[in-house]
Length: 221
Image 1: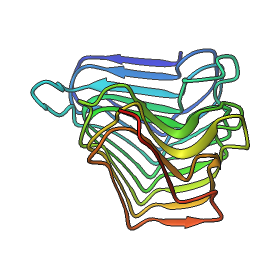
Image 2: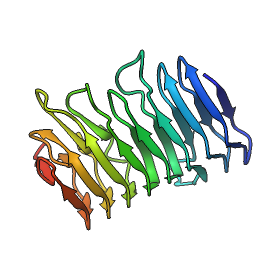
Image 3: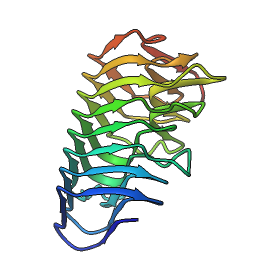
């Protein structure tokens, strides 16, 4: 990888170009108030950016932020589950970024009180099946995740099971998808948003254009 930040307070990575690395380009874990802004991250063997911090048990926010950053052409070696961006923990903000051109998911927000807004997600999940541009699964305690005002475009392709833009899988609960635009997203049995079990998930005020369907739901317990 290129840059690792561990613990500390208010470290900033600004206006950097990072390309041609084999593993995660930027790894920020622990500490408080770290920021990534105005960077270009591309041509990677694995993942783009990981930010992990905060305390989920007590809902103490990390106050991490990534903004105005482009991540493109990642997962050249590891073809699945190595996202352009992964947030893990509590109180992390992703906004005004663009993720494009990859075989699997673009990003994941795994935790509590995480927000992704005003981002562009384009041409991802081109190879993986049963996959979303955003994926969250297997932990119903991860609540309070908000995705709003994002533009999702050309996500998924016709495959055996299904692809979608936003995938709440395996009992995901308590998330919000509000004010997004979905263009040509979904495939097979999945719509632009696929909900596989769980409850208290709100999908409202979105625009779906030329998608397989808007929302698909399966009743998994």
